[in-house]
Image 1: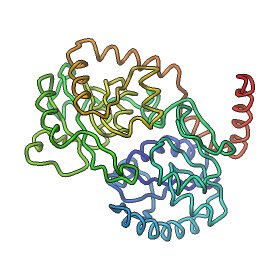
Image 2: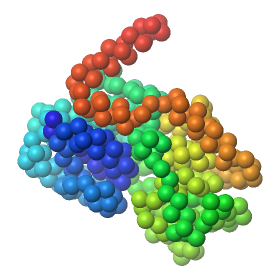
Image 3: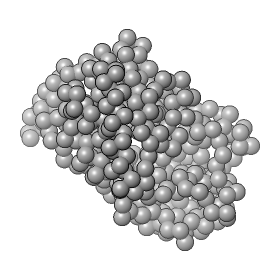
Image 4: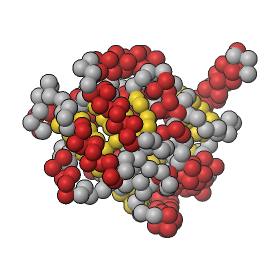
Length: 362
């Protein structure tokens, strides 16, 4: 089978890297179409993947509208040259629209409920929409499939992820050193309009309070102000998840990073007004107590200090992580098998879900 995979964001490189490798190993031909956003292309290069670039990231709604037109033209050319049997990707309007133009099926993976604009531009073109079972928004049931896991497990499950201790050496740290990762975002994504996290006035308060409990590393999408420069994290990007694994605490505005920390067994606090919309956060908090979410930045800092003052917090999170891993599926295996066996895989899962609902009295 000829499969075109759309990758538009650094996180999606991680989500897709293992399924792509497995599909290629099984004899399928895979074409990666990528957008030039942040470190997406650098990560693809580090993994040794071949890819074609079909656009770049633009800021603002007008810029994104132009980018949609430009990217669609380039993607159409790539797709026509490759002639795929199937398009796959995560919530990509570009992939969805080109798949429809070429009358080829599109499997859309989605886990961001509050990405209203992206979902509005993507879902109508998808033949199948796959989400975690904890996804909170209603999707057309005739094409909605769920799985018992999180996208982040596709690359952070112990089957696929082994922490690299060399990242500690790179930063002059030992296994016994306590450190905290703090993340700021720019709030410029289309689904971030009107949202907020840690106020500018509170940012330095976070640093001063947190560094009493360990070294503070700041990860930011924007250029940091002079007073924060000495805290800026400087490591190779492919080692970030290893550092997150060893951290005493993650706190910040990045939702994906908050989920990653929780899945790695690191105490995690997400500070954002968007948290209330996300099923992942709700599931990880209610069922496993691996993450805390706050829209109030002061309450979030209080919780961070409470966790840091507990010398046993890291061990507790590791135990909670083990419970979560036992109850969730191998997401990489699910993605790979679903794509390889499509469309039969879709019909089989739809039938199973209908049977489960009938048995539960729905």
